[in-house]
Image (cartoon, rainbow, N blue to C red):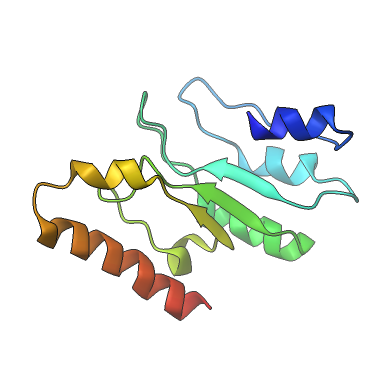
Length: 123
């Protein structure tokens, strides 16, 4: 895990727990913010239990604190609506190999266009 590696290099790391359904409580995120926090990173959707995180709410917390918000959307793109302008994220990670799950080029183009269009509007 890159965060644990950074921690071994002297960076601080705050890990926020989840409830029994895998949901992050935005208030826990707010409480975990420290004066030296430089990034908040949360997975958009869990592929094992299906939990979708409240990123729009967490993004408001991050913005109020002046901290960039990153989400790993690899499990979400093409399955649920994933628009950076609606999520309020500053950084969004995708996994190229996940794009192989689309049945047609049209499905891939539609999913990619939705993300790219949202990026243009958010920027």
